[in-house]
Length: 247
Image (cartoon, rainbow, N blue to C red; front, side):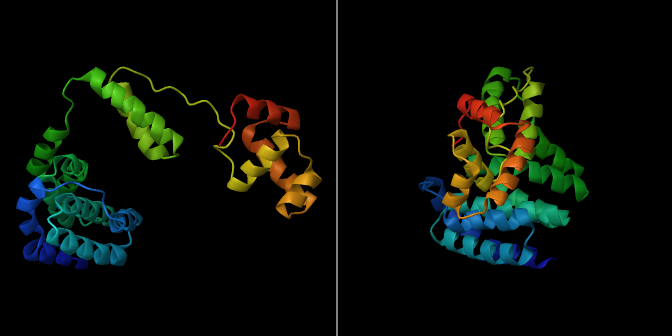
């Protein structure tokens, strides 16, 4: 048993399940910052940090009867263990999340449960979890939500998740629309700032003085801006920026 699985088992026995009755009727407030850190640690595959945050989160949340937070903690543990290849431990964690009374958050653990059970040699459990994920034929309802998800994920640069939303959107019979090219999408923060100043008519020496850089450095950044945006002149940059000013 991995160190994280041992912690999960101990936490489950000692405290987490005692909080479920209260959790049913408790308010589902904002998730503490610790859970954001737990998500990041799990997605990064940081075993030590995930173990510490998981144990603290489960014990503290269960003491308050915060079922939502416990469910999310189990979900993040399943993500980590699937990523590490310990699918047996991932199945245990995902099953705990899926069996909770917090249905909204429990359902997000279903893909992890399907993968973990299938790879751990439990096809029946994987099939049962998959049944809960199958489409219900409500194409229009799914289309509206998937369209919104695709647009938002694309806008925030979450390309992998945007691609998943696009595949599901195509399954409903709709092709995801291409996002219009925005001037800041391919640029660094410094390049965006320089591009904005150029678009408003500032010269390289003026920009250099404002940013405490040399004119040669500004020129280098500007060449990168032109290359990334597929343009060749300051006039084209001004036109592009006027058509779609970036934040």
